[in-house]
Amino acid sequence: MLILIADDEPIIRLGLKALLEEAGHQVVIAANGREALQQARRHDVDLAILDIKMPYTDGLEAAAALSRHAPLPIVLLTAFSDQELIEQASELPIHGYLVKPVQPGELAAAMAVATRRFAEAQRLRARAGELEEKLSGRKVVERAKARLMATGLSEEAAYQTIQRRARESRQSMDQVARSILQEP
Image 1 (cartoon, one colour):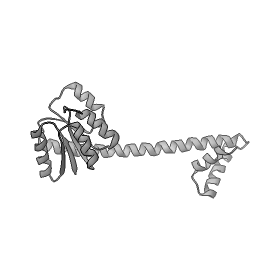
Image 2 (cartoon, rainbow, N blue to C red):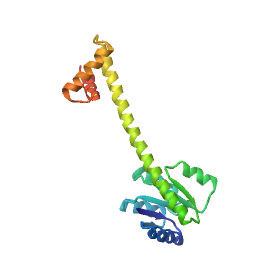
Image 3 (cartoon, helix red, strand yellow):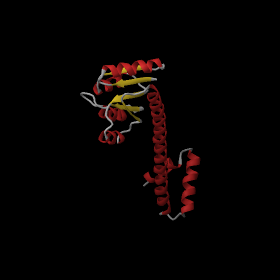
Image 4 (tube, one colour):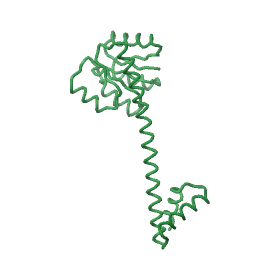
């Protein structure tokens, strides 16, 4: 994986870089949140590890910006385990939270979980979009059916009319329904 590490402490940044490269990953580093956002735009990173307390743009702000513009698995890293930071982090679309110092096993586990959680969230988001589209199509069919029923057709006959037109024109039922709703 190509991993973005953003931490204002050079020793932490370089230590994580060495650890991840030893595990076979490629690493891009940044000294603050602003640099992290620039690096994420420049490189197609697979995962970001962001320190929370950084100058210019902190890790929380960087995580929010990354999630909006280029969603990816994000693990927050901090020397602070205070409840307020945890609550702020939990409101963001992040996928892991580690407290320094980080052990290699903890980091590997957090990365694996973050990657899986992100993939699952993406699948759910796509499925929600599909369902929303289907629901929208059904609503259009129902409105078209109501329009046909206003001309004296039964509900069943109106539905069959939409089905027949869809079959004959090789269009979806919601496309036919939209054309029915546009008729004068």
